[in-house]
Every structure is written in C-alpha cells, then in structure tokens.
Image (cartoon, rainbow, N blue to C red; front, top):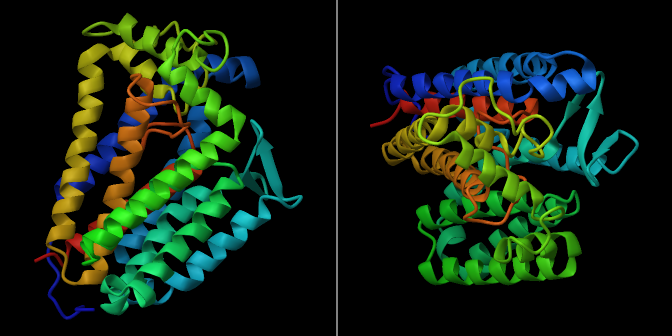
Length: 367
C-alpha cells in the first residue's frame, strides 16, 4: 500500500455532509420518538438521549480513530476483526443474546445492547477488500478466486439468515458483489453470483411464511390491511398527509401509535409527513451527495485496497438508503432496513460514522 504518498486535506464536503446528516437524524428522531418514549419510559427524549450517547458519541470516537488509524494496520487487522464479529454473531444465540420481535440480533454488554450484524457490515467489507487486493487470481480465476468468494459470502449470509435478518444479508452481499466487480472480477462470474443469490433469496422467502406474506402483501396491498400490509399502508398515508411542505415539525399524527416502527425503518414516513415532499427531497439529496463523494474518493484512491474498501462502504450506504426509501414509498416490499444516519440505532450510527472516518482518511491520500 502506498503510504508514501503525501497527505493533503480531506474531503471536507464529505465530512460536512456526514455531520449534517447526523444532525438531521437527531432532529427527525426527536420528533418521531417523542410519543413512543413517553408511553414506554415516561420520557419524551429517552430515545434521543440514547441515540446521542450510544450512537453520536460512540460514533464520533469511532470516526476520530478511523480517521487517524494507519490504513496498513487496518488491513492487517481485517481477518481478526471479521472473526471477532462472527464470534459476536454466534453469541447472540447464547444467554448473552437479546431477543426482540422474534429475532436474536442483540448482545447485552454491561448496560448496553450491541447489534453484531451492523458491525459485520464494516468488518466484512474490510476483510473482502484485503482479500481481493492480495492476489489477482482471486479476481479472475474460477477455482482459486470465485469459488472461495462465494463460500465466504455464503457463510456470512447463513449467519445473518439465522438471526434472522435477510435484508442485512442482501445489502452486505450486494456491497461484496460490487467490490468483486470493481476489483476486476469477470462479468460472467458476477452474473452467475447474481443468479445464485436471486435463487437463494427466492428459496428463503418461500420457506419462511412471514417473509412470503410480506411479499404477497406488496403485490396485493389490500390482502391484509390490518396485518402484513398495515405498516406499508400507514407509511403511504403518512407520506401523503405531508403534501408539499408538510404538517409542521412535531405535528405528525402517524407517530401516535398509527405507524409501526416510527423511529427505525419507518422514520422516513414521519419526515415526509412533517416536512412534506420538500423535506423528503432534501434528505434524499444529501444522501446522494454523500454517496457521490464517497464513490469519487474511491475512484481516486491510491491503491486497490483503499479503492475497494471505500467502494464497499459507499455501496452499502447506497443500497441501504435505496431499500429503505423505496420500501416506505411502496416501491419495494418492507424489509426492516433502517435509513442511514436517520433511523434510531446506536450500533448502526456508530458503525456508519466509523466507516465515514475511514473514507475521510482515504480521501487525504486520493490522487
């Protein structure tokens, strides 16, 4: 890796965009979580305070460390960090695991809960960037490269499906496939991977009734208005109620127990209701700017490892943003994917800010 390349100023537009999105997220969460916080904990700002401590403060620490951490050492630690995350994923099935909504996705660590699948998004991308950059055969050879790539992706997907969190598996595998293609992987291999992944996804949906019900409700919204189709319909009502300029900050009706998950995967609907079409466009535009700057940094990265690392992170954010907004807008089936930087989730925000610290670090060496 070319650490001899002289440093220069980081991409300040990227950094500003990151912190602006974080601020927008806190503003949106303050309103979206007020009623649910009051009803559950008798504290209007419970979720906002939790997000600030375990998301913002932890994330800022992660950003600072990643921004100043040696990229060479980061590369050397990639295998260890992935293995550590895999151990954490397995531990969610032990007494240390914390179940919610029928899914074993959290670990209790002291007084905190940590979501290992969110950490895996970063450690898997870091590992895959290291692995793909190490040897050209891993990118162009079927036996020495493509088969091991499929094996690693399959193992990660299997762990995530056991949580179960299908959406996270799809997003991580999408980012990995983009990285494989950018590294020089053959288009025929990419096409084969897409076919295998698509067939696997269909099989998973078919074998799990609740996933199949979500897909059926997507194609027939009137199928179960009070069941599997309830969240989608309520989200569309909230978006439609906002009109062009919204009903006003804090004046959402849907957050009063009409809209499921108003602080997580449905928060975009609350934003659309309170800030209208204009507010929704602002959120989408800022996310697009962030993604564009990240891919631009990847294009100008000093070596293949950093190019793949930034590409993977940018692809993950892009896929997650597209999936969340499309699902809430009725363009895709609901998946439970949170909106980056905006949705409630301390682990998710901390990992995102750490990832942005890595990109800002790479931007100092960009050509």
